[in-house]
Length: 310
Image 1 (cartoon, helix red, strand yellow):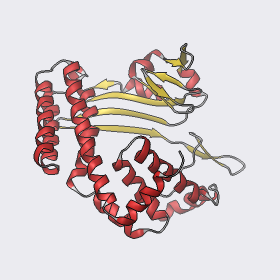
Image 2 (cartoon, one colour; image 1 turned 135 degrees about the vertical axis):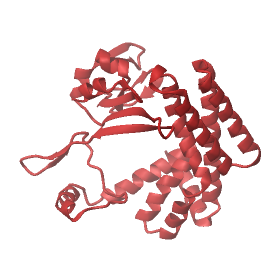
Image 3 (spheres, helix red, strand yellow; image 1 turned 30 degrees about the vertical axis):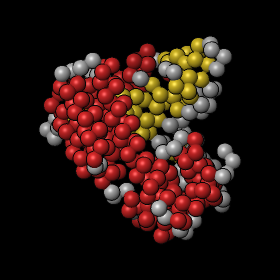
Image 4 (cartoon, one colour; image 1 turned 120 degrees about the horizontal axis):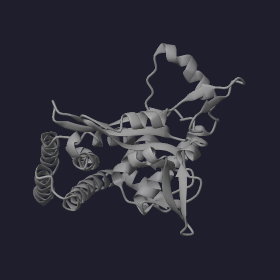
């Protein structure tokens, strides 16, 4: 069903299939030069979906081919992603379709397709009619699920503070940690940070990949739509930044705009897009690090996290 859906919607006026998540890698390997871990989702390109197979390089250097039939044995996280264009609004966006099937077995056990029953610790909005189903799911969660959830978040805080510094990701995880452990003042402070204009640069970094995919798609996306999207990114950068940072970001975006208008070479455009992404993520990272460390309680918590073993 998923493969049929992917093939039927691979391309068309104003949309293009980007990737499909289906199956889980059985062993460590690399795919297209990027590492994949055990039980990480298999990411299929449209061409791989058509061919019904993908090639990976195993840790011993040998090649392996996984077929679509192989993936069906352990579907895991099932997700389809498209790039879409709304020419009337001049906007690009990503659209996703997640198949998160969960059923109740004859013995009453709740079984999720991907093998993971999500703990409901984000904001949950329920209609009264949903309460019976929600109550069934909660019964499947162990008594220490909250502690396990916080521990997992704190490990990610360590990861994005020490190993792969990204204070925007740190802030998102700290917000939930502080909500769960009762530090509501700190949680409220972090929540307010996401309303600042500089956080719009997150969208700049995310949309660059969307623009790249659209620009490489031939006739599916018109130049006017992509140019209008870059114009919006320029306005976001002007509102979020000042001085040299603003000038650098706008300069990168203007080069990108010219490349798209001229249908420039992929290599030149890729360099422009990488420059924009790096500049946007650096600005966001610097902003969140300054904001988080300006609060003594949060700074002390981060210092304690850094001292923990990996």
